[in-house]
Image (cartoon, rainbow, N blue to C red; front, side, top):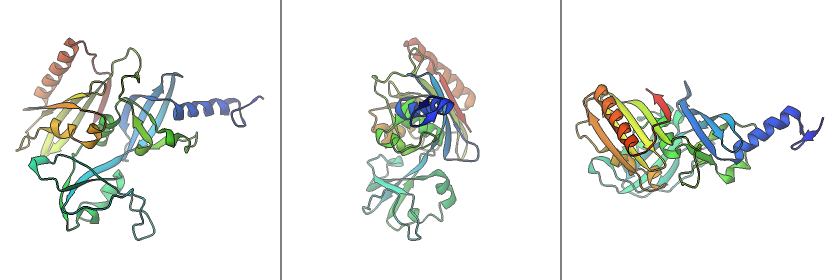
Length: 291
């Protein structure tokens, strides 16, 4: 047999080249879904335009909170000693953000940690949320599926500094290893629309239907709620657009619209998609759903 690719032969070399393509080229995202029984793991199907190959990969995503503190604190990378011989696993980074209900931002920091660790801590037992100088703790309550979509869109790749470190056999990736591509020069699936349509159910004292349409190419979005609105009726779109992970990829325009129930939300969603089509824009191509 003819030896190929670092001593591999035949079928081994074939699959080795496939995995190398995954670590080298841009990923065109086809679908994303939550892995059952693992709140921080997403199953992502991607294709590579250059080679026409299809891959199933898993991405470990992080939970993000924002804390507002009375005094500045040291930023951390999450690999510091926690005093028990292990690492804290909590990354702390200073951010500039707009807090809900007009709260004054003094010193704001984004905390990033593993989703499963976050749930195992519990809000009452988490020492990092009960320190004396913490004025407030803020979460968007955004499902991890939706968070992944708005952070990375439909076209992403491994960071160049990460690809050389990974084994060709890996199918699991950490969120910090990835980078999105929103520039027009990076073409997503030629001749296929680039809208992402997300439908979720969320809770605010009672169950509320939520449907969202995001266009990463135009950096525009619409979030439509169906159900009893919260008392203060916040401009969710403006709060979402002000998030650091939107701001770092350019100026986003996200509108929010409240309706009485899910049926009215469906009608508003249909009208919004129809209006987009009248403007010559394509219809949604990707459906992601969670409850």
